[in-house]
Image 1 (cartoon, rainbow, N blue to C red):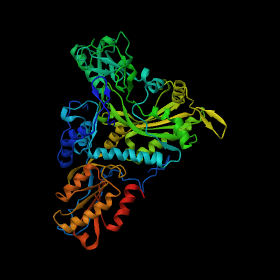
Image 2: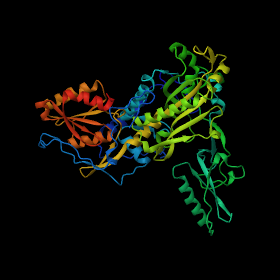
Image 3: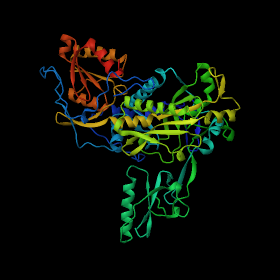
Image 4: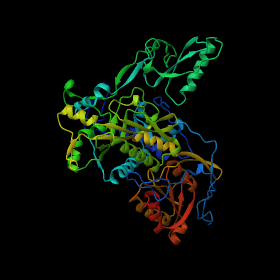
Length: 599
């Protein structure tokens, strides 16, 4: 965020001069999310939306592998006390798989709005495309992601140092890094509808019969179902043209790579008619702004499109002040901005986002980087599993050599199967020494490392693990979102790993009008607040309160009842299995610490 200034973002809007007005505009959404019952469902309708762990690299597994979602593990019986219903909460009678449960992107968007995770930015003004606000639960989840990443990647490693560089920096940095001249996406315009498309995300296919007769072309936007959509279009085109015979298998290609003689035949997705798409051209993704009182070329600057360059230009400062020895890494979490042509898929591709990046500096040489690269791939993969990303939803993409940047030695992505299709979640690139060398040449300042062991000087090479906080947020929600059957009724639940759950514990007095119960529960609540984000819920039936916490992803509920006053015991209810345990209050804090923090 940029506060206390009013920097114009050419051509249409300005950096926020104050966070106060944004807070006021979000008040109706926050109150609505905080008061909605779990049973109610509110659509997130907006015209702007298109819809067994081992220790690796310094992070520690929890005390046990967190439970596999029980809705995927068959029928699990619950343990409950047998006291009468007047003193105890109603028993839940087991968790069963809901075999019919599936969800799509609209469901994810809806639960994020309904439970206060994510709101469309500027919603009371009909929204602002490509920008999102994080609500009460969303900001907690997001902060937990960053906190756990920093803990595991920086605090628990001896070879890592932190940095927080500025969002706006000298324009010469982006010239030297190649962003001014080359940080662009291919764009095409529809001359009829005036809509714009990324040419590398718009696909076309030639519709022809087996005998070679051409019928026409179809076009589709990139998605997980684009092949099926294109084939339906081809069948419809064949019927409309009243052609007989079998169609050749339809192959799809990027419009960005379409030959000049083919482009006029490709229909616009907006009109369905050929001839209206312009030739692809480069569109620079950086947001330009003005710094200072003047508004001319000399005052032009950019909002950073990535956090990495701030690390590279501070390499010497950090290395010398921290007395770091290669190999070592510099980590950074921060906002970045890209003027995406077509932001889509909710928070997956937006114009303002947050990155968690590491530049890990290693000795030069072709025999050095492969092992470091592999180690970081393993470290990042295992870290994703440790915080609750589902293993069956992720796999690897190894970039082919002809798809690599000119300076890169290798790049491997961890891809996630989102509801809209499979796409990149995390990347680990071997960048060589391109960035440090480019800044040394442009600035005239040396970026060499003086190795005391070998008595040599060299420009280090770099391994770059990088992940978007917002994309990881979405992957965690998709991994956690589930529906099962408890006591014969459907239950909506978010099965977050306890370490990243927005609310760690809910404290529930059985009755809100019994002062001794409330006082005892309040005492437990305040003690837990010293360590966790804790919810207080005293309204409604205990079962309904459980359901509210289930859909918020709260892993534990602590219920204070009349027996608590007699024997200082409470009921701890675990979210996934609905299992209930009776324990002493003195044992409660150690139990939750082990379950949530792993120790």
